[in-house]
Amino acid sequence: MYSFGAIILAAGLSRRMGARNKLLLPINGKPMVRYVVETYLAVVDAQICVVTGFEADKIEAALAGLPVQFAHNSDYEAGQPFSVSTGLLAAPTNASNYLIGLGDQPQLTTDELRAFVTAHLTADVQKISIPHQNTKRGNPIVVPAAMRARLLADEANPGCGKFTRAHPELTQHIPMRQAGFFTDIDTPASFEAFEQMIPQKDLT
Image (cartoon, rainbow, N blue to C red; front, side, top):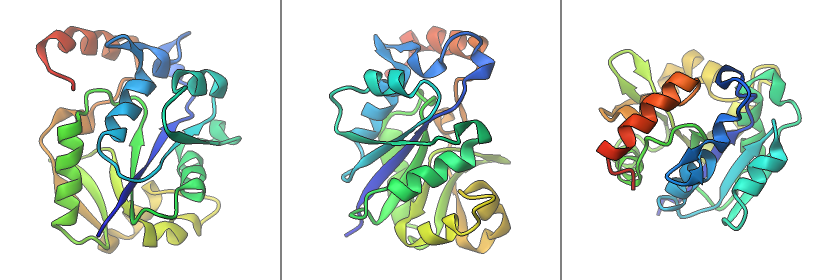
């Protein structure tokens, strides 16, 4: 039986949002990062690891009371690959797969995540699954736990981005049509557009 944990990346500097930390912006009355983590909690059956960095204390406070573990990336200013490696190092050993997702994708729903998990299980479960639409790569991705050591082997460029492009034979593109896989909130304009969309879509 395959089990799924999750690594949620919540360490970034949020520079493009201006003075506000995008992960703390309100989504349906909750901080965005909490809204996203609760979505993953409804899908996975193993531990969720939240990788913190910038304003880690505020991120942890926003997630207070949720059954998650935290892993702090002290090198968060060096970029996302090091947050991925931090999460992989801290990821639970009782999961056979990890969903590696972003804390700023509140458009994703539980049903969409479940559909992606099902698509991975009906494909080659030994490969990394990447949501794909036309030429776009999306998030989250599914990483088999057996692949963790290989993703951590390159200490200068850890994580998934460079590895998956260098080893296409170990990856598979999963066609997903839902916009949530390809949409994150980085700027005030993207947040405003999302707020306008909320009344028109059931986000549960």
